[in-house]
Length: 231
Ligand SMILES: Nc1ncnc2c1ncn2[C@@H]1O[C@H](COP(=O)(O)OP(=O)(O)O)[C@@H](O)[C@H]1O
Ligand SMILES: [Mg+2]
Image 1 (cartoon, rainbow, N blue to C red):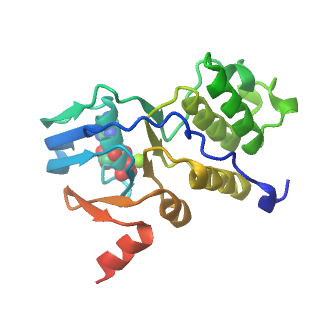
Image 2 (image 1 turned 90 degrees about the horizontal axis):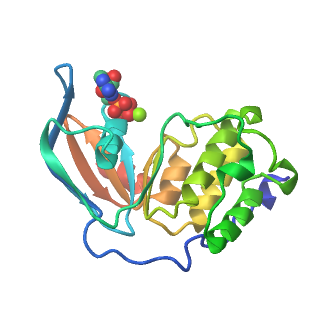
Image 3 (image 1 turned 90 degrees about the vertical axis):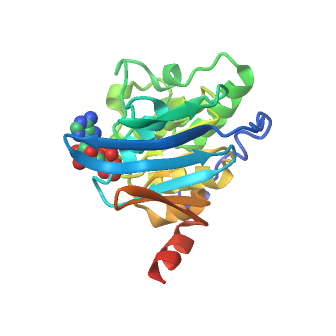
């Protein structure tokens, strides 16, 4: 398939966007350190439905830890996290995990909801999994294919917040392009960690910068953020 031929099925979430009025989550004065090394202190932030946040900052500053605190995989040392009852997170960790490598592609993206199944079937094609490949086992997939499949699997759960930790890091160029194109059409709420300027600009309208033990919020895309900090 030529790069230019990749088109992603329109608005995956077109008819199941139910707007949540209250914040999706609220950080109240949270602090976190590991073994005496402080990552951040007294951070208060919140996220609303429809926002698309990129978390940026040098390696080791605590970006992944922030995601884990949102999800509840890590607790803050101080402060609290309030999560909306409606919140349904789809989380793609830096390393994908599979319960069984013997499962097939099709088994991994099954949905009981026929409409969701129909959309996922379209996306499978868009993501480069032609019908011929649906019986392939996870064990036979490349790292990039596993990442793409993991993202599709998340979508079968109909999350209202998609949290992705460096999804394009190990991907080849065509696969990056596929993820990028997906986000051009995807209209849901997202938190993304990435070092890829193109995907950041494509996806995000808010930047959270982890720096100097705190979290700074910038409105705009990644290029706007770079311009702001250059001033
Ligand atoms: N569970 C943990 N136990 C001990 N140290 C950790 C743990 N998780 C993260 N760290 C440390 O906290 C720092 C921030 O990690 P992380 O949130 O993964 O940063 P980033 O995603 O920005 O690269 C790193 O120094 C890392 O080694
Ligand atoms: Mg990380």
